[in-house]
Length: 291
Image (cartoon, rainbow, N blue to C red):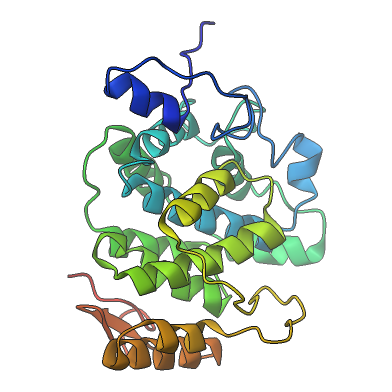
């Protein structure tokens, strides 16, 4: 079977600008790994040995990362290609070594492949998989069209994946409104996501793109406390403290206060025009109202 050549972001830029396409090494700005193999999950045994809870978190964070990349001009082509490869088999019914990390994670969740322990079996019973919604989301991204009802999609995905980590829920709430976020809000999201990928999914195919986005736009807060649980270094600041220091007086304070309350266990916030308030939503626990 003939495969289409994959170009790096630098090469795409040169092609579109009418310049000579530069040669780059296989690893520089390219997807981590070939189209024929996932680097995060090198074997079926690796998939089955990953805890169901970790796999669900991984799926959410990769869906969020992919959505962010699709909204950035320099990374939109790469995001479209990744969405295309994730649904290239048409379904998530069986494990395929040629699938992307996200394809394998979604396949694992749908088919309860992570069931080696009683804990995993219990977790699997709490997970749901909406084939139609997930494929529609990826198909729209693949086609380069604007995705509709993004907050609704991500709220449902979070609920179906039984996401318990309040930090991941907070990332989801901000990231789903990515095109309208301020620079400081984007920095909070990317800083937190970089912590996740470095601690839990360093081999993820999308990590390198998120890292490049962070570097190109200066979106990773320096010396931020690692919310993944690593020991806090002397002088490290929390994201709430960084938000207060880096934003406007009013906006930064409100954002810092909101993040602080979320980090303390609260999950009752609503974003509206870049400001944060806390409000109960009896229809779906606590969520971000779609605009």
